[in-house]
Length: 253
Image 1 (cartoon, rainbow, N blue to C red):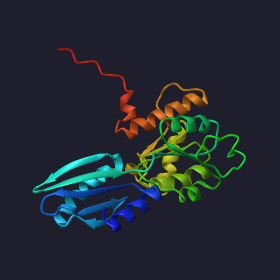
Image 2: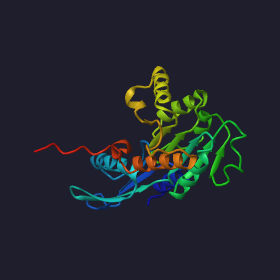
Image 3: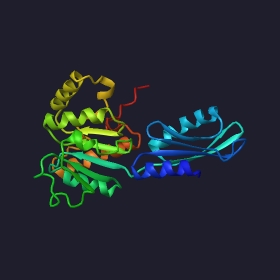
Image 4: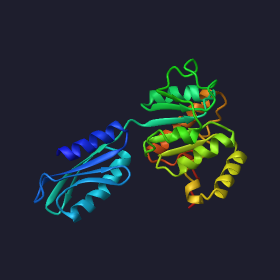
């Protein structure tokens, strides 16, 4: 890998920013390298503008899903590779549900961060297993993090003064999952507040609220399980609501 491309990739990895690389391994532009850093920063070239454009489309998918891929573009063969940070579970609100949610997240390979402006909730005694604790208002804390498609953010704070600033940041970001606790009425009220703040329906549809799959959960552990199950479904490209819909009976012949 060329030094400029290598240094850019090294920096992206250190800052937990997704990146994807393309290298021409056969054809007239063999040796050419192109790096795409989330969301749209390009470093290097494959040696042909048309080839770069084609590679960009492929690299965007790898920014979301990772993996490797061989692509043939006329006479050129490209090797593509995604370089993704560890998936990150960001929990806003250090309430009881957050404790088992951190445990489930870590079990499934997520780095975990809990955010709360209330220091009495955000203690090492309550969250000895979390990777990070940030005592700050949600919008200020989120500004410290890399908000990329591998981030799942869950708002467990019922209070709009905590929840709304967080939603404003998250809805303007590219995080892969946004969830928020609350009843259907609470979720509808949240939606109206955010719509009044200028967010359109398409953007607001990104919010999973009431958060979690409908498992009939009652305890903090069960609710945390339902949330994590929904996060996994979304990450794997499934519609979690449709997945639990009852199957329709076949029409009579």
